[in-house]
Amino acid sequence: MTRSSHLILDEIPVIVNTLLHDPDHHVHVYAPPMIILKAPLKIPTGNSAFSFACCADRAQVDFTFSLAPLNPYSAVRLPMTQTKMFPSAALLTTLLIWSVTAKPLVVSDRIVKLTLQRHINVTRARNLLRHDQTRARYFYGRAQALVAGVSALENDSASTKRSAGPTAIDFDQPIVNSATIYTATIGVGNPPTDYNLIIDTGSSNTWIGNNKAYIPTKTTVQTYEWVHVTYGSGFFSGHEYLDWVTLTDGLIITNQSIGVAWKTNGFFDNYDGILGIGPVELTRGTLLPLKNKTVPTVTDNAFSLHNIKENQVGIYFAPAATEEDGELTWGGVDTEKLASPLNFAPITTKHPSSLFWGIDQDITYGQSTIILSSAAGVVDTGTTLVLLAPDAFHRYVNATGAVFDIPTGLLVITEKQFLSLKPLFFNINGVSYELTPNAQVWPRSLNTFAGGKPDSIYLIVGNLGLSTGGLDFIIGYTFLERFYTVYDTTNKRIGFARTRFTNATSN
Image 1 (cartoon, one colour):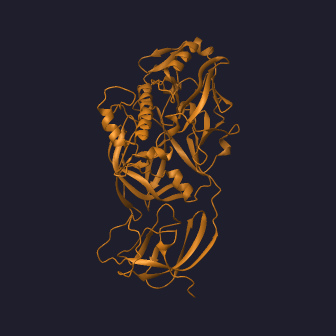
Image 2 (cartoon, one colour; image 1 turned 45 degrees about the vertical axis):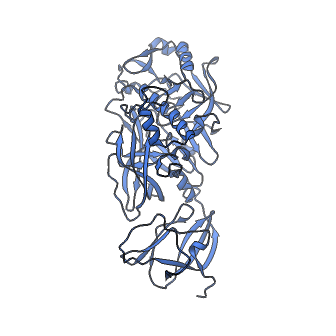
Image 3 (cartoon, helix red, strand yellow; image 1 turned 90 degrees about the vertical axis):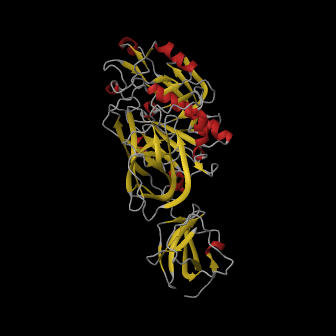
């Protein structure tokens, strides 16, 4: 082979972070986010040429290299971040480019489906309203901390010193206090260890270690960073690692940043952690000492690795009275689940909802009773109920005749009132989505899990408990189980569509 060029790898825009000769006589290549490796490489030592494919700026490039010992007097050095430690006899090497060819990258045009498991919380999800209101305070407090440039740990320390107020944290209230919980099984490492993670659109860090211990493998990279995330009702603290994350057999994300917990509060033992699919800005302030650094989400990295065509996630839930579990789609929409065209609404510009998956909408009870007008709020899988700002909540109470039930924290109505219950319309970007009378009722099969009476009729609308402006509602999973939603990072928008469960009468 005739040599056409002679360049040190870190003299070109595509940079490999670390090359280290390890005891089994191979060289490992680790790449930063701007480089995409199809798989970790073990490169034979010696002067024989070899090739691998990577991508930069969405072009696939084949590099042919040979190995040469590093000249200790050379002015060129490879970057030494994200290194792995080996015995002192390890030999550092450089790569010399022999030839470079480029060809178009084939980006996956498929969507990747991940089955969600639905769990009934047999410990009884008492006081759902208290849990949801605590989460609402977390949203408000997290947004204030981001604007102020305060880390999550500093914000927690300040919050625990306050006995009340919109950002007070209730660490006695478990984060997992829902009667129904959706989780996904993902693998971490190579070979992967499976972990059962809660799906959360209201946070963006992915972490493990609450129940099952983290098992380091050959793909594990220690970042030497601390991570701390609070959820209003609970938190986790631990170390940040880079590792492979396997979402399905066809979707493996290399160099994904994950947290490994050494301390948690507010989580039940049968859940290993959280799969965060919120906006990446929510990760700012969660790492120490680099508190202004963000952590690319699982969805962001899947997109940058070209494993999915679009930087978006679709979520499909099913009502508790059905046999069907949920589904999460990466990179697009599962059109088989839709019963209407998708309607997209832009992320709201109103603070603090703009920092989350937030939208603007109007809410009307029946044809004429206005509940909310031009209000901003958040779409959140981690909230159970549909929460409304106090003034809007009281308008709903007056319209329905419901009364507050102390044991459950829910509104309750009589059978006669149910027969006259009217639809609740959510007008989102010009399209009206109807929450039918049946859909406004808490699943009767879960009454006892919520601390209620088996035959009572409870409603899924609750009091947000905050009058802040910019966060006047939270749409929880009792709404989301009736509709298909799409979280589009690239275009900063959320999509809604009806499903076969939108008008279902089973409850």
